[in-house]
Length: 255
Ligand SMILES: [Zn+2]
Image (cartoon, rainbow, N blue to C red; front, side, top):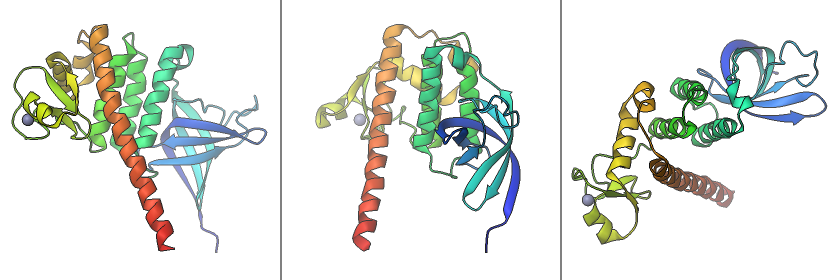
């Protein structure tokens, strides 16, 4: 028996899109209450496609979605926030792509929450502000990691759990945060983190965006923060990919 068709209205952010056939597009959408899913937008590349024509990447859209079984179709779409600067500025566009990609990689279909949706919607707005986009990107990464359950430990040594002294420390991706010099020299893995970078990361974990954007972050500090967060994210994603591959292998062996 075919499943009943359901129609619902939702806000959505377009994370990715792909042309299919002559005029249709497959959109990867992030929504506040229905998680992440793929939906077909018919006729979006025809100039006359009024109803579903507003499906640019990294826009906030009000949508009417028709669901039939596993299939989602965009019935109506109206842009709520176009984040125009993200299309006009190539650097900002690249950052928007990075934010969307991270969100996609750290969430499974349908398990993303309203918090993740709100974070991405706000972060696209931060990228449009007249500020270094790296500040917005780092802040977003730290917040996304916390939502995904991977907040780095920044106040206690990740190996010995003792409180950290106010001095330069080390960061260990495998231990999930900062480690003190004593434990670093015992285990010999990790990378240096300056006390200034540590303070900025702590701020990012707890402070609202208005406080973060007021910070003065010079280029060497930006580079240090980028190196640290990207190393940690890369490590986590590799672990995740390995665990997915491991599960697949187990399943194959079961057959
Ligand atoms: Zn320690």
